[in-house]
Image (tube, rainbow, N blue to C red; front, side, top):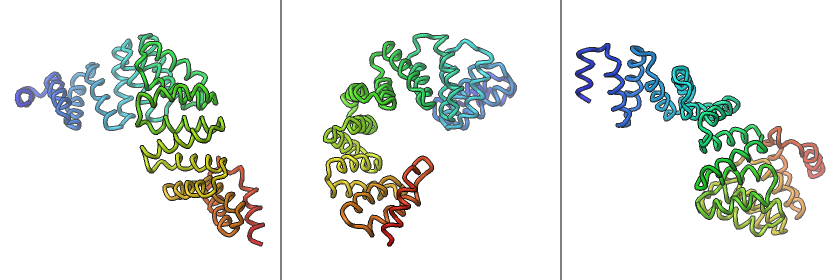
Length: 303
């Protein structure tokens, strides 16, 4: 480090000295110092593609994706045939929710390097975020053809089939995931939900229980397990799971709604009334389909 310090002190107009010192700071984990030196480097030599790329990577580690995108763009303007840089910019665009731009960049990376399995996975994720699982699935399948060890592709493919409503295929794929990673709470959760949708409640309960054992604050797993117990007419178990859901997430509208329905059926009208009021309080526009029905129930129970 001292050699570069001395070189810069001797000649502060030497861009390479800043570049090399920045690289050393980067290796040592001194992110801010590295960014400052790359910035000085680029002020002196605005055509240093590697400096733009390296600074972009540092911005990405700081989750400053807007700055990272700008630097990846500068690097690509100077060197537009580097597949990995398109992939990196695609990831940054994905992280700021710009899925259309990320799809364009992943596609360009694939055009430049047709065996780029991670770019297929990334583009599949972007398609999934846009609700286009019919386009995501072929990308995940292609990624697996290119790299049979890419279990993230198996996971994403299983999730895509789940979102598509192909629960049999989702179960097959997610079973492969949990065989390889027994700590993946989301794989157990989505497999459990697939079992639930197929009315296989005992297996669904086992999967939700496994998700909860991995993450005891997983409100969605408690809620879905409660739904299973509802289907099995296990009143106390269902109420217990809805209560745990609400304890973790006091604004979980559907947990109040289903708890209220159970309580009303069992003759606990006053307690059900409180649950229905909380449903109305916390229901989002996407959860509002029962509002008129619940308003009528509240009126009836209040008499």
